[in-house]
Length: 416
Image (cartoon, rainbow, N blue to C red; front, side):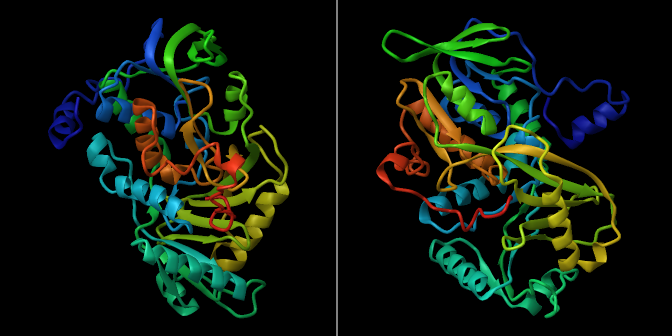
């Protein structure tokens, strides 16, 4: 059933009891053309584009927990494309283009809100780095602009630009097309659209092994619901990618860290945009429900824990209260953690692997949500055609062997 004013009106007369399930929950078949491991945003987007653009509908998405229960449901929903290097600019701006009409494409409101993303500069070095990003983006045709401290406050009135704070604001880079979307709605929208095209979404189905034939190529997976055959497997398991890829005998250049975030009690609309600060490792926006969504940097230790150290969030809240004194009396409602997978150059891997039939999408670190539609689009192309899309061709495993790194540490220095 398509969502529309007519369907909403029709179901209103039946007390909304006539809506069908949003996606099917079938038992796994014996074999599929493609298996996607991980039912987060990237995995579901990959399955959708495999079906919608490449005609491959005999696809299973297997998830050890519930749909969208990993990093997709634990991030802070920021969308932007103001990265430094040409390879990153192309990939993230491709995703930003797809965000524009994603709700219409999926017939599902993902609540995309291009309210602007402002990145603060607190030191002379920050100013130089930020202006370098602005100039690089504008050369690539990507919208980004430099604001003085006074212009930054005009755009975001709660911002404190006093000269006597610990890290005074010296200016900011603003990408007006950036913004936020509703993370769970993105997962649900892709799941619903993929399921309608014939994709099987299998929850509570943990992968325990990857099967390989005598020639080394993949032949399927072993799961807690039994064996499932496939000639192609795409692994999109975020913080647990190293574990899953180890089942195929591959060691990945990844480290997994806890990443924390918080939300406040709901407030009336008071914060108009997204504000980030790499220097003080904090960022903030306001959700449509009214709560302040606050993010921190990664913890300093590697872990598969979804908690994190209390001192990290305390440091973040200290910084938020200094930048936005009006929020000092706001109460925090809850905090949570996710597991991010980080590569040595802080850029993702979207590529074929040395194992025939095995593909991997990982290493997004703290910035994977913003890339969801672009990542799924190019990864589906890579799996369907056994060759990379031009936009993800540089993001190979081999770049770590050959030294062709895409160093985005400066653009990804804070969780976002």
